[in-house]
Length: 192
View 1 (spheres, one colour):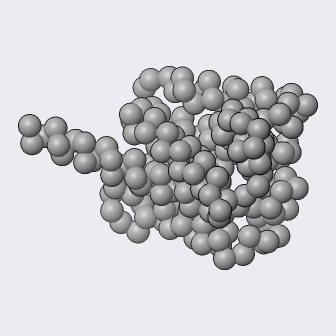
View 2 (cartoon, rainbow, N blue to C red):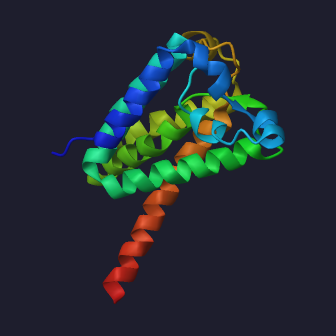
């Protein structure tokens, strides 16, 4: 078992920024500041800061668990999933369908979560192993269909900013895309 150094480093930075709330205004994703004032660092730092302690705790807990396991399990797939999730999420946020402002790890953490849940299901394809994948999928559907749910807004998020379910979907798509990219590259190497 290898040490998940990327997860530890990323989590340490996120926790450190959480302990320095005065930096939040300089770091969260703000489309107008990025586009009009070229504050490009916000494309990365917006995912590292959180608008409340509760938001930070839930995102950091999910990230540490899923990313730590994914990094130990398969570091290349993990790295690809984070890169693809970050790129896709920033494209979404900068698009006309995106938000003016955004913060948090939840969109990105869905990519390694997808890797782990898919690997768990592929370990043994039966109902018991499919259940975590089904529960995660149902959570996404509920978020997308009713982002104002009491549980989602008041218990999990408590961030003062509305829940943005498309960020979670992008993370899941990035996870499956990284699985596909890695599988395609392995098939290409076998043919050589």
